Image (cartoon, rainbow, N blue to C red):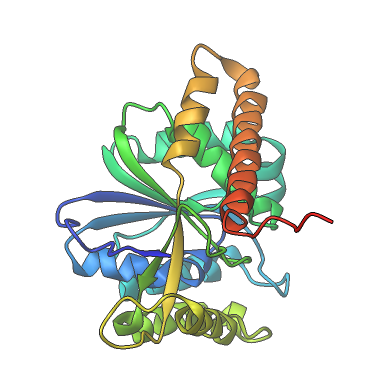
Length: 275
């Protein structure tokens, strides 16, 4: 796998971080976000969905306070909250996209986006990606050449073409503290421990490209080819028709990417012997 340093040339860049729920801003890309902010980038987190959390009993105000504390630790701008119930986000991603555009249009132009990758199995995470793409793919407040990076929260990204590894060893403490800021979500499930274990496992099983073995690695997918396909699919499409157009383009790209990844994995396989 190739390595990526998000902090390289990050000074002065504007980055939009799309998090499906309060805690995803840290669980998925927390180390990469801390790397960006410490290198001088301005990161604006937007929490899209309102949710009572894993226990189903946490007041929205508490979850917002936890995200505020989390983002202070990561060094980002104060997060914005779309405040859309998860069911509404999944049911009407276009409405969420319009609200998202209104919320962030004065904060751009953005040079990069961090969003859930397209194979997250959590439906609200996929809906968050779709809403983000609908809002930003061809928006005036988005740099047309912006980087689009996909992160995994519920599901780890594979070691596949177009997926990069980020050494977050030096930022493990910041990420751990940011995750721990979501106290309501850490009380019943070991999210923090599971994510730390994933980062460690990815470091152990990834290609070591530095002088010393890394102890924590995050992975990000380069989604720029996917965004280019979505932009083309949305050209001239208006209203509700934009949703299936964007969704079909996403699925088409993921299908091709999966097939290409499999072909590359098996490219060096020996042909079967003739009998």
